[in-house]
Structure formats: structure tokens, C-alpha cells
Amino acid sequence: MAAESGKKLFVGPRFRRIRQQLGLSQTQIAEGLGISPSYVNLIERNQRPVTAQILLRLAETYDLDLRDLATADEDRFFAELNEIFSDPLFRQIDVPKQELRDLAELCPGVTHALQRLYAAYAEARQGETMAAAQMADRDVGTRYEANPVERVRELIEANRNYFPELEQAAENLRDELNVPAEGLYAALAARLREKHSIQTRIMPVDVMRETLRRFDRHRRQLLISELVDPPGRAFQLAFQLGLGECAQALESIIGRAGPLDDTPRRLFRITLGNYFAAAVMMPYPSFLAAAEALNYDIHVLAQRFNSGFEQVCHRLTTLQRPNARGIPFFLLRVDNAGNVSKRFSSGTFPFSKFGGTCPLWNVHSTFDTPDRLLKQVIELSDGTRYFSIAQMVRRPVAPHPLPQPRFAIGLGCEIRHAARLTYAAGMDLEKAEGTPIGVNCRLCERENCAQRAEPPITRTLILDETTRRVSSFAFSNAREL
Image 1 (cartoon, helix red, strand yellow):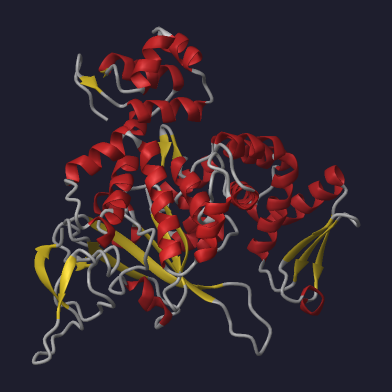
Image 2: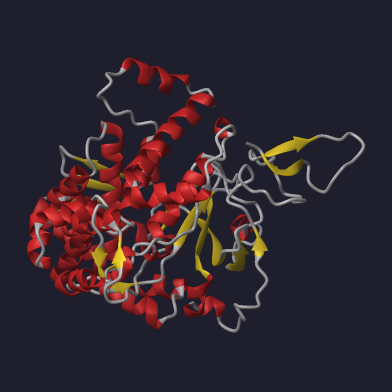
């Protein structure tokens, strides 16, 4: 982030986020920067600017990358607000785009509140009246968790999918174990046995049935199904260790999230345990160094770290350590019905919170080419271009005659980073034609799309029995107000 000497910047919410991630109080960070605590308070409330000198002092004192003050979060918040205010509910309210951008930048807390309120409204509108009844029955001062999965996703996004305490704990564990990737499973099993008196057993499928992992507290046994592949087995052992050895760090992170109902609290703890497990299998320094050296060749990385394709892709979205960043990737996991079961973004890709994905994105085509990795340049309606790769993955096999679970993984980044990927070698990225896609059909205003599943909610539907167009829906050019 470039800043001229003497230039004044209002970056209060971003400054506060960095302070909280460092675990510092306003008084502590004021001492480090040589300014008063009252001035820090005014900065965080956007009542005083931050000069370039203070920013440089912040970077030097706390070994930060000034890109931490970049606008990735605000871009994502703006995209989410734009999606909300495109709903017909607000068609009589003409909110200028600049006002939405100002709100996203200056009041991220209000943005989160609007997202959660709209999520609750959307669920009630779709027939989930039980959620509305729960809201009515609760006390005014009680928080309502409209969707625990979305709530945890919000918490992950608020931390940019990076948790330094867990990264450090994972690195410390790997240093203690001091084993190569292929010896990790045995080392983790030994640690569970020697330090926690937990025996690891690989169990036949007829015993485990629908369960892949189960911890028997009374017998102190960790049972893992024989259907789980070797990378998955190591992951499950690392997860179990994380719950035990990182309990304090997990609770600290959860505590920073504020009051949570039991369901999102448990889900957040499981998510953080999974994060720790991935960090144990792919320690940050060595994994980032290998990713850069290999030009992010996912299959080679999977082989080197004894991990799966999806595990590596997911890990790539977490490389957000200040002054040691990887490419800011986004990730999507869908099934062959188009249901989104996982999405992460360390960049600016505007995932939809209230709809599916565009069928023109070739992540959906991987089910037709299960053994091929597909690549694609995609372009949103605002002209923003991204480079993405996609491949189908198989989860632990299911006994016959159950259907074999299959998912598609899409991984991408802004086009300006694509030259660093081995998958873009030989491509003229500046001239490459981008496939025009939308966030989803309900928000996309592109005309004549044969794949369109519904008309955009921002346009008036035009019906004409005398004409059949390429698209099933025709709509006016004028935006509804």
C-alpha cells in the first residue's frame, strides 16, 4: 500500500482489525507507535486520520505488511451489500453505489448486522417460519443466529481465513515431531498414545458404518474408518490433537467472536480444529516456500506434503501471514447438483451469500471430465477478470450400493496473479478471452444467456408469447426502483 509523506488516510475499521489480530489493547498499540491512547481511539472511530509516518511505524514495529490496510474486505462487504439492496424489497429505495461502498468501508459492523438481518428475512421468506418464531420468542437483548453455517463463514472471513495462534502451534508441533510428511501419521499416533493415552485404531466399515471418525472418551480410543485414505487419516489425528493441545487457543479465538449460541460455537471450534490439522500437515513456512517454488502446482504439492487435492487447495486460501503472503485465492466446492458446501476467499471474489453459482463457470463441467484439470479465464459484469482451475474430487469411498460421493473444487485468483501459476504457462493473459459469468442468475443482468435459470431481480420480466429467445427470460434494460 503506497502512501505519500504527509498524506492523511481514514482507515479506522481496518486499523482496529489489525490491532485486534495482534491481540493488543489501544493503550499497548499507542505505546508501540509513540502516540496517545486517545488518538488511537479517534483513529479507530475515523475521527482522526492516519498519516503515512504512522503507517510506516506500524509496519516496522509489528512486522506488518501494509497490504493489511488494503481494501479486500471492503470490496467483499460492498459486493454483499449490493446483493442485499438488489432485492425487490428495496426497489423503492434508490441507494447510490457510492453510499453502499462508504457504508462497507466506514461501518463494517453495520454491514455484518445487515447481512445477518437479511439472511434471517430470506430464510423466513422461503418458508422457514420456525426461524421467525424463534426470533419473536426471544428476549430483545438476545442475539439470533439465523444460520450457524453462514455465521461461522462470517467469522472466518473477518479473520481473512488466517489464525496466527493456530499456525504457530502447528509449527511448534511439527518441529517437536521432526518427521517427514510420510511419517506424520505414525508420529501423530505415537503422540496421542504417549501424551494423551489415546489409542488409534483403523476399523472395518461394517463396524464404523456411516462414521469416518469417532473418539471413544471412555476407552480413550480414536476410531477411524478403513474407508479414509492416508492423508485423511493423518488429518483426523491432527484434528484430535488440536482439540486437546490447543484448547486454550481455540477458546481465545472463539471468545474474540463475541456471544455465540451453542451451535455456531461448536461449529466454529470444529472449523478451527480442521484449520489446525491442515496447518500441521502443511506447515506454513515450508508449504509457502514449496508453493512459490513449484508455481502452485497442486498435484506436486499434494504429493510432497502427503495431502489430498482439496486439502492443498483449502490450505492455499489461508496463506495470509503479514510479510509472507501467498497468492490470495478463492475456493468453491460444489456437488453435481450445484449445491455449494464450501467457499473461502482471501481475495475480492464476490461470492453470493443468497444464491448458487453461475453455470458458465467450468467448475460444473468437471463432472463430465473427472480425470482432467480444467482452467478458465472468467469475467464478471463489472469487467473484473479472474483465472480459475477446477477438478472433480472423490471423497472417502462408500460401500456398494451407495452412490460414490463426488465434488468439484474450483480455485482461482485475480488475473494479475495468474502469471505466477504453472497452469497459466504459455497463456497470453492480457489477450485471453474471458468467459462472461455472473455472481448468480438472480443478480446477473447479462442478456441472452441460454443457461439463465431465473430473471434478474433488478429488472422487469418481459413476457411475449409470439417470440422464443435463446434465454428463457427476457427483461427490460431499465433497473427497477
